[in-house]
Image 1: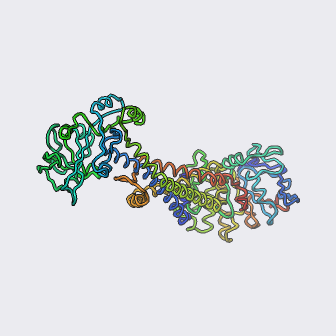
Image 2: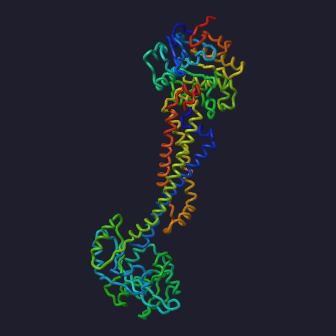
Image 3: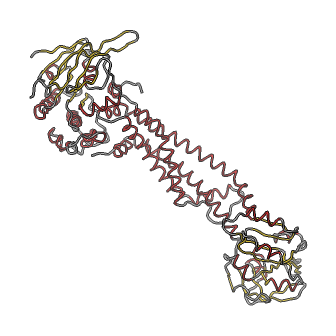
Length: 397
Length: 232
């Protein structure tokens, strides 16, 4: 017995060059499609990871207080605003809040920094709650301080490089003339934490006479909680400002949306071209086999049988082309990533093109649907061929 | 051979074509009875209407008027016309077709070509018939060859096996030797005769070759759409 699949498959071998060219067209459009979807997925994942690496999604600070070390440096270490530590309790009562960590930022002028002195920034943190948020921190040397009142410091990678400090060394807070023992040095994180010197919160509050005062509170929101609702509630607190990293994320996503639209348009054009290619190939094949199809109907094939036969050919082409395209996308994903990084105004760290099984299946399903659609017309035409016209060789095609 | 059992009966079959505003009667009031197990041949010059007649008898086309009965079952009458699907159902149940141009699928092997009709419709007991037929037609050793690798005579034997694989009641052959040399033509007609005698299959053959036509049990001649049985 010979099946319809075998007949369809062998028919495609008849004009090998044409079938291969059609396959290349489908494979290229599948490659573009899977790479685009992979980029969409990968970019979001990488961006989320970058934001998760910050440890918290929301920051609360006193109104007017700079929240970036760089801004504070520009202001010469001045302009810090404070809020009461008691606000922490109010925030923790909110159901959306998973964890909080209080912080106090202080900056002093260090005459020994650089050639003509510079601003040295210290961040007072609670060792427990802060380290729980920054789980991705890796230590190059040493560990976190454990005593909340200790005179110990953990230095960011760049801060330690700049000051040429090792674990066990002492650092001096200028103006206050107080020494801290370095107990840990962090690995590079690629964030502003690299330039920060972390000290126990209570110690810093005591030294700078800021007992019960904070500059910043980091908030980790529960998974699936409504961040926007929480934000709105926090805005009702007196004299505080809310900085949402979700907003930052939205801004970045908006920035790349233009680039995404362009890539999507290219993918759609590629798919359309592939579709036309498939229709053309199958239609030509039907045209060339006009008499043969008529004979198949003479020997017992119903219109639906012919329709299925021609449709099967389209499905075979699209499945093989789709699989080839996915393989191509997997092999070339690193190159695609390099190209995309050059095009985009901002790209997060980590893999930008993320192709997983779900994505592969979605792409194959999409290519198959396109194939089924492309095959409809040629298959319908083939099904309508009348055996008598075919035998006569009439070009009523 | 069981005489007087009608395999096929045509009464006043007529097929009229329009060429511009002119009506052409390709088949004109043709009546004939073909008994079960008959081997008949129809001869006539080009344009005499013999192919149109075999197309009507083989349910490839609806007549303009007239009646057709297959095994006593009415197929066409003056008011009943069949759709393409209805014609296909009758064709695959009743007929096997052999054409001048063989029409083998070039990408399928000899055996696959023979088995092809079973892909679309299969009568009980037809599954292993392909190999038996290739043996009967002396083509078993060529079963794995592609059509391009065999001769014209062999291709027609494969086409005959394909026409017979679904155990048809009637074999219709339109110019089966039209593309073959004299020797191969004689061989093909001899094969048809053997099938007729061994299997008791009703065969209707259209040819322009009078010598070959005379090998059949009954001989008809067509001229200008009209038919006459020639007594031998």
